[in-house]
Length: 334
Length: 180
Image (cartoon, rainbow over all chains, first blue to last red):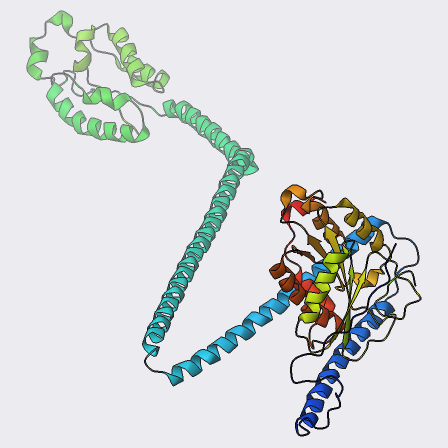
């Protein structure tokens, strides 16, 4: 059980501030008002503080706690939250204290520097060193910042180039696709088909015309017997001479028609001379073709190829192949 | 009144009262003497009690600070303190309560582990002092500390309140107490 508590009154403090007024009138009256004053001031401070405490208590109590019973865990969490808040406020207070201390320190340092000069050298050296280091730090920070900036610029440029190249490749791709599409379209286009049809028609027309020409051409008399009524013995050289030029001219004109006959005429073998004809024995000489035969051949076979006509005349005259090139024929092409 | 409340009475002018609760009377008396020897601008009053609740018939001034003294050598003191704690209002624990553990010097006599008292103080969010009250020097130092604390708790120090002191005195949590 408890013991009855004892009360003990504290002994009066030893300092000059007395409690209340120990009534010793003889003791320094001049000191008393001063004592009273300090006591009163102290009491005022005390009362202020206590008033503040009570006020805070009242304010805290104004916040109503909920009536229902809160489980203990929630109370714990609430307590922790409040403690965290207190910690944060304390930290802020500490920071402000530090700032204040730093300011006070700097002013004290300044005053100290102004006062004494002998000690300043070390301090000044230290401060200069600190300033130098700070400058170096700032410079290196600036450099690093610049380098980072250039790096960023390079990266940005690279990215832009990449994008441009991507777009270009895309363009190329689309162009290629378009070309391919065009090519495919061209193959199936109607224009080409029309052109092809036209071409076919042209080919057909040309073949028809060729046929026509080949058919029409033989209608012109290609050979004609020379007129030998007055001179029965042919003078080959004369005839050749007389026929050479026109034959050449006729061959040239024949060339322009596109016929193959002048080739044969051009490639006459050894020139016919009168001597050869004269040296030829009688059996090799051809016998003369009568005028009626000439007219018949000319009329009937004048349309045919000259080679055919040659053959017919040989058959008619009965000469051998050896006399082929001695046989003067005038081909006239009107 | 069965429960002590901090604002039951108006504060006396220039007066500060401390209540020491503990089972060891001799130790408490010595501590009280040491405290009264200290220089203090305000009037000090020291109350001693073995346990709470205090008898209601006595007219006493407003109590500014309660210090529970636990002797690590006896488990009974801890029990006594724990029982007494129920008779203290919750608002008292906002800086106006402290725990004092004595007898930590003789480790072989200790029957209560340090951690027990640490956990007790942590539960009540109150400061804990370790002091060997049998040694003169430690007792004097402790008395000085208690006097300063009492002055603040009584509101005699402008600018510092009991709650402020509590938050200032609280150190970072001990690692082995985090898993309480």
